[in-house]
Length: 545
Image (cartoon, rainbow, N blue to C red; front, side):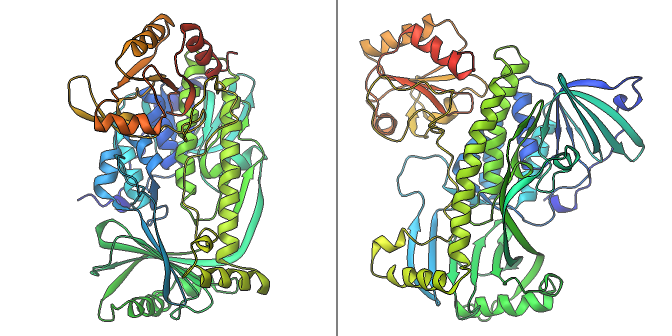
């Protein structure tokens, strides 16, 4: 088994370093974490060559981001590495909330059947990065350069000029577009004199990876003010390889250096295990870190030809698993738009919609994240009294459970107000409004085999979901063909039990068509489209309108 934490990638000198003038590339991405790797792979699958720069030669140290949501797994499926993630990760959908050591309620994130992917998997970030690096290595259009640190950037009207430091000296590269995916301490953001603004929380948290042989259920456990850690909160999650993530709230006055020491972590973990009936279980401490956090974002994610994504653009608290998941969804949003612009299919203005859509998503994540943090770590006696009263009420009253906030878990943003959406002309029910991420469902393929709706969507083109097989469906099919644009059509047969679930989720009738963007967000839908309707909707989704 590969030890991804000990991997060291070789620095290699590139011909660009000996060029008489800076070599020019369509896209240079800075930062080979989950977001930068996702963006690079997505672009390469759309036939866009990419240079990916990373300032060191290792993967993530410690588990870091561990909760990867259903939508993120569906993105990884499209990139060709979702199966590895799910096979290695620990799938879960049940969470339990405790107050003073007593369980007050449980929740189920995926109560309905008919989804290929679980609500979440827990998988250490170094595995996610390792699998993405290995996928990138299979794509010749990705030029991944380790130990290439960007030390200067000069934005220009037609791109940017980057100065890059290597073990063998500095060189320069020109790029049509730059993807800034270099994390919360973004070097590019600093070099450009930009900043992220928001709220910094005066609290400290200890996270520790522990390995133990304990037969605990695979679920999320969150304690408010437990007897083993009074006045604070604790979170417990299972990861791959028999590893567990424990998260202890410490308070602002805690000494980060002291709290990271194994002799101070051990009694905290021992008290937790003893409290849940695992007195004799032995454990080992792996990676540990003490952190503070801020909920903040850049005012604008687009600065000319430089586009910021992931933690370089926005930051949230870890409650709700919104950091890495929102970053991957940034890349998912940006890649198809960059490809369309570079390949002459859309005007440069399409990239403005990347900024507006993902700024909206960031605001939604920050709002949820801030509310969770305020609930978990009340900053006044009145806030604490309210919080504790809510928790007491949850034992007997369902309404109170909706007020409990141990982290509203990551869901994809519904981009209802996107300028790329075509407003409904027909009446529809359900959640699949223009701007929503398409819901998965089981389907039966034309050859009779079983499949999944999202797997049938095209990895790089617009996809049309066409429901039914009768005359109305045939008329819609003719309209799709007559629009004379590159369009991947998926037929959904509603007469089977499997197809019936898709029909229900999309409130479909025979002849209904849903138009999905290349990132699988709905951008238009009709009961009976015309070729003109379809052409106009695709034009609008490419910012041509």
